[in-house]
Amino acid sequence: MKVSKRFFLMLFMVFTIGLLGIGLWLSLLLNEAPSDTSGPKRLGKTTVLAIGCSTSLFEEVTKAMENRGANVSYLEDVPDFTEGIDEGVVVMFDGDWLEENLENYTFHDFLRKCVSERSKLTTVGGRTSLFFEALDKAEVNKLYRDENGNSRNPAYFDPPLVGFKIVETTTPEGPNVYPSILISNTNNVDTMIQALFDW
Image 1: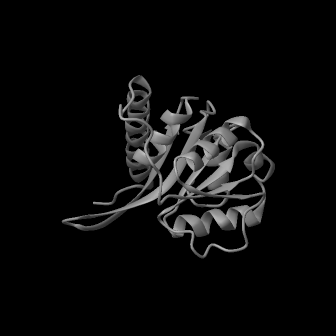
Image 2: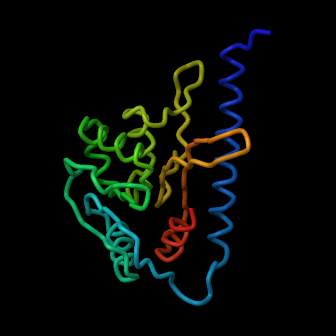
């Protein structure tokens, strides 16, 4: 029995839409009630690489993470290195910086290297939908396009926080690798940080 490309494309769409639905449901759930009544979570061993800093929301989030004990390094541009940027590192882009660097090949190369190291990639503030366009341009995670070539961006409404990471799990059938996206539609800094680290 021959299976067509259209079948695989439809299967991929159903899987992606399902993941988006779960992500949005979790985001709404997190926005409804505080998940921890004992106070802000300490981020003592978390390393954050903050790139760009022009939106006030980005600054608020990174400063709040720093106040909770995270090791935050601020850079004006993507570094020439990716050594030490691994699964435990959160790479956070300012939305305005990302918009200015959308076509930057050095940025695209940096995205590919970070994803291969299993880092969490996030964007805060500004036109966050461009983050998924950057991933598409870097060929990290292609946006779905319909038969007319129109792309489907999961963050088309520019939520305050978006993220992307690769998740690797082991099942009885063997290793399973899949993309995971984060979309948070809150401007509450504490809730954003909690969603990011629960993701």
